Length: 323
Length: 237
Image (cartoon, rainbow over all chains, first blue to last red; front, side, top):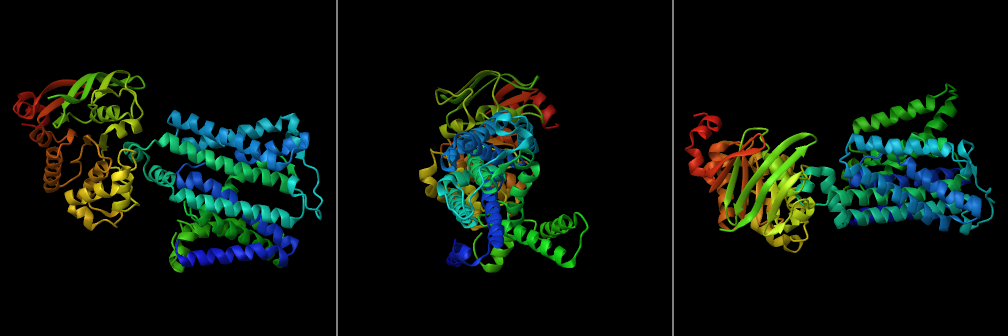
């Protein structure tokens, strides 16, 4: 990374840090959403962008993580900072187990991707009938006192949630950067570019792929915990839904798969497009159902056609900063 | 001469299909051994079995006095068996230098990366001129040199070549053979798998003919070159 990139980063950080002082709750909720997808996108990017393993089932970790911490709070009053560890543990183990199952038996490429969908889907169906956490009727966490900050139980003002997710996104960014430069980053790059060659060079591909999926799923578990306490409710149909998995990966795809800034930039652009579409549609008074989604889809389509490697690699060249 | 690699009664199956049947061979320390055979004879499978990428159904593989049968491929690699896979298998979006660095990720090679890279550039000066170039943009010959160089970065004692002459112009093939001979003179033991029978028999001290997963003939390169069956089946004479 060069000095110019550092300066841009510092400026972005400063703006985000002071934002709650100037923004209203509506704007804050939008930026919170952006940071949430920036965080989750970075988690997904470690598995796909760094190690080349496409997961279309990351909603699994989002849901299991959210339900693990949510249920501990709902049933036993155990706060999210403790529940977090349970969520991380369960999701890391699930991720490692799915990876071990797939990679040990040579399931790779699209078949691996199908496996990730399958696990997310049958977990969704399982939770629909899991009465202890409310089944398909959902689970509702104690309503937050919006003007009182209870950081211990993660109940409080929008600004508190904002700072929590800002911290998470920044931590994910630091972790991603460190991983990319670590030996694991090099092994992943070899596996992503040509797995047969990596194996022929004596890289333990099984080991490093498992590491990628474990880190990615553990990070996504934290996103799930945040989501559960931010919204205060959990429904299998929502949190395990495949559209969640797609939302998570759209940011990195638009921003630039495998890059450090891509997932963050992608999440920002997507949030911006979604919000401005809403504004424009409202201003024009269009009420056709689905018009918002249609415009959103067209914008994504155009971006992917024009910048198939994502926005960040092109922008990085323009700004003359490193990828 | 003691055998650096000794394969005894190796059997390999892909599902129910048997691809190697009681294959036995020896590669002497410091030698060049060739395995020739038609497409589908099991040549690449043999290399993959030795490298630990495929798991043999039966048989024994001993390398430098150690039984390596059934070990994981990264362990075998780190013991000093390198392979230059068929079709070169480079990382096309990485530069020459990055490709070479990837070859030195083994525990046995990590510390000597810089020194090995210098040696590779000495062996293949052309690669030195292309060190910042993406591997995917190199010519076929340069790519093959890079594949060999990347393998050397892992400091192997035995290097296995799978069809190194594939898709290369005759002049480049000659350069390649010279490079293999040079490496061999420096002490590297070579297993050469080729469809190009004339080329591989000329360079090797000993050769095996593989047909339908079985070794049907073996002898010195010269003997096989003069054998009527080999001449008829593989050289079209």
